[in-house]
Length: 499
Ligand code: NAD
Image 1 (spheres, rainbow, N blue to C red):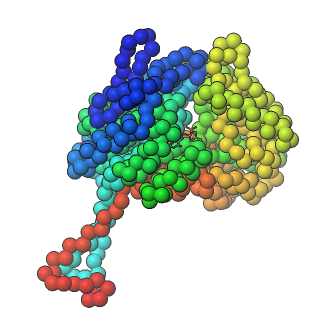
Image 2 (cartoon, rainbow, N blue to C red):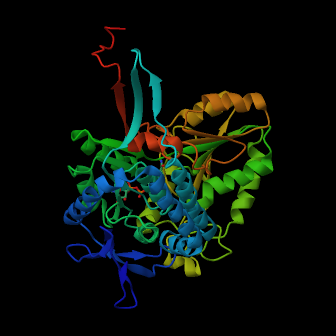
Image 3 (cartoon, rainbow, N blue to C red):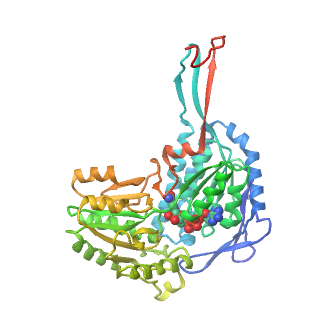
């Protein structure tokens, strides 16, 4: 995995079962966003490394697709076991390079473990369909086949979970994989590759190439031997990937941004709602695709909710994710810190009030990292930019409404549709909300985060292109159907004619 020539480790790509430097020998530095400390040097790969990885994955494909799916599942099961053994070590690595607090990093790895077991079980299912033929003495059935070499391009905010969702679903279906992790979090992906290698995955079946989006991501998308692309990231890049893949008629799944909301009705359990809001808005420093960035509150409960929320926010502690006392870690990098800070000018210009936070936190040790104070914006209306655009930081906009209908309308009035939540004790209101909230995920009396891997994950409208990850949704993307007809009548039978 690495050369340890000096105190700083230089890591390698994983291609054809071997750890190899980028063809050019160039590297990128990866730093702890809480302290700026150098974590390691990683390959600054380019198209020639992509070619090499695709060649390895292509060579491995026939062997892997012909490996019985239950055997593929056994390897995934071992991956789950090894991830469990190494959970703490990998979680600590993840916190250092991404910044999220340790309990969340453990949850990130746990998603990988859950997915490994789930997909291992799929090795004994991968259900197809047997249907009756319209003709006598004829069998008709459909089975799932892998696509070939698939590329998985992942963001930095779930450095183990998202690569696990994608690679494990792809692999159980018999595809071979090139994983391109975000350049801010390559080490977590390499740790995952190490687990796959130790679990006995044959060489070339999974390859990991580190590097930038333009240098590695786009050459992967364009590579003629890559059959499909599973992408999670921003809308801007997702659109580019989609356009490029469309030129070659490639299959693409896009999991993009969100502008998720929690609705709190007057009759809600306020203490429960506060817990849900805090966790969803400020967990992972607001850097989850499902993070709550809009709080839609009914007029009657608004003053009390706002006051208690401000008290609770004042108690949140910023710090290194490895410190037990920390509630909120840093943002991923200085660029993201600037971006979030710039949104405060946008909020003011649009007439919103900064009720707390609103600036970077730079006291003492915090000055070394990319910390932003948890922020509550008041007086926000549905059309303001802060209520429409994904900020991806610890910034929550409070929007007051009169009724359930208005709350639903505000919730649905963005270009995104990932996750929505409602706090209410009224069963009728809850059921109407479940029906009317236009998002891929709906929570009742829970915040906007906390999806489990056995249900399809993804969003409507601008959050993606209609595919789903996890659960059965994942297999739909990573397989294609083959319809088989076996005629054992001994004569020519013509469908639609002889029946
Ligand atoms: P990003 O779009 O900048 O990068 C995502 C990945 O794409 C990275 O690996 C990056 O290197 C690569 N990339 C960049 N330019 C590319 C190009 N031209 N061609 C091919 N690949 C390229 O996103 P990010 O900043 O890493 O992640 C944050 C975004 O991800 C947010 O918008 C968030 O909402 C979204 N996200 C969505 C989900 C979901 O499931 N809907 C989950 C997590 C994150």
